[in-house]
Image (tube, rainbow, N blue to C red):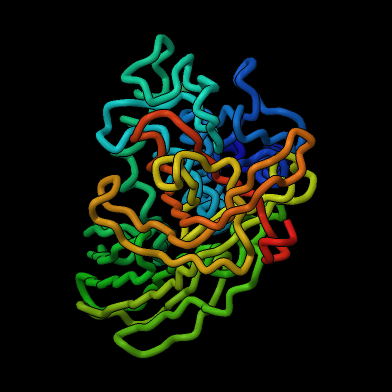
Length: 383
Ligand SMILES: [Zn+2]
């Protein structure tokens, strides 16, 4: 309605809703909906992990909503939210084989709470079958979100290997992306206008590549990264001429011109605002647009007792043999056993491995956690 009528009141209302959701009610995965009961939002900052609802359909709705907010405003912050929810909260809802679904997408599992309509794993179908149908319409619609056009500006919103033909106001442009994204932040874009001519190619520089995991302050990275996005045209560096989250490249484009974008993807640690009591004293891991989790098969059968030191080195490694090919994060964590009074009885260092959140729950029920105990003192003895 805000887009169709141009009425400020509608826009202000939808913007207020968005601010409330993104700043106070969104999971790190982009999922929304804290309560199973009546499939609803909770209070501000109510974001339980074990009992999160974060319905697959709600994640898809979040992607649609943010895409439309982008189309209305041209602001890349909405695409940042859309990308986050696509790579995490949406595709976690479908199995790697594409034949089983989650209704709820919690950020933690104890291997006991049957969060998925009475089941622990993904299900082939539900009595209320919204999520399977929504996934099967959303995935094929993905090509429609990769680019956008305004007059003679071509927007590169998402980084996906593809070829496309985009109609600008002045002429049609063939464009090609070659990338291993999200496993690698190098993106090669080849621009082939029908005839040489001046227009803009606006390349989104994701918030996560600018030290902002999300718009707003609900989540932040523990440390700043000095590794910055690098942009080249035909092999020569160009400065980031930023407008609304896009690096604008306006020039006379010729057939075969190339844009090389490199988005550094160091392993990042994320913390939530202190108001989110379920994430207090915890840390999550990200790499590029992906949220990671620790799952039981990779960590000696348990993960809810694992503490991660801030200075523990985590190394990304591509594993073609795991879960249809993923980048895992490897390092060391501390397994904490507790006395009845809650004090630590023993702390033992062990191998640690994290996988992309979307790929969990393919190896049987058991513990999983996105938010791990944070040992910010970085000394095992200080826990
Ligand atoms: Zn649904």
